[in-house]
Image 1 (cartoon, helix red, strand yellow):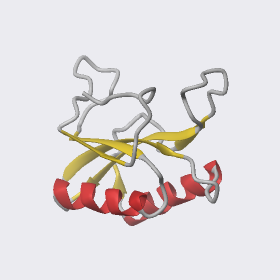
Image 2 (cartoon, rainbow, N blue to C red):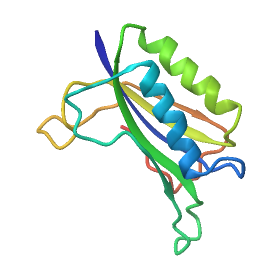
Image 3 (tube, rainbow, N blue to C red):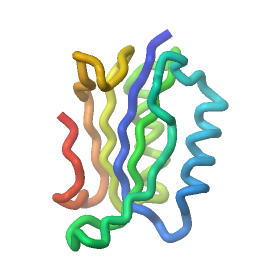
Image 4 (tube, one colour):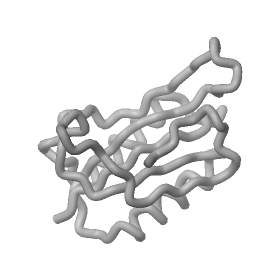
Length: 125
């Protein structure tokens, strides 16, 4: 079984609030197996940086889970889901088996984007 790590930043559509976004994540985790060693909460946060004029309100979150499917299929599925509802997104992916605060921080093997991601959003390296 492989542990997959996704970090997502994406536009906040008018039709989805923070509660509904977390319900989507909760359903994903109910359908899959969360990595039990992950100390990071699996939740989507609504970031509203109104003091920073070039940073729009957006969702941000990390999800780690164990799954037997391959990386390309998972990334493609998440990208397909976001394409239908988000005007822009950035997804970072890598296989992960460690706490991000450890000596080996996450390094992103694959980054995909859709729409025009604002320059003020984090870049995954």
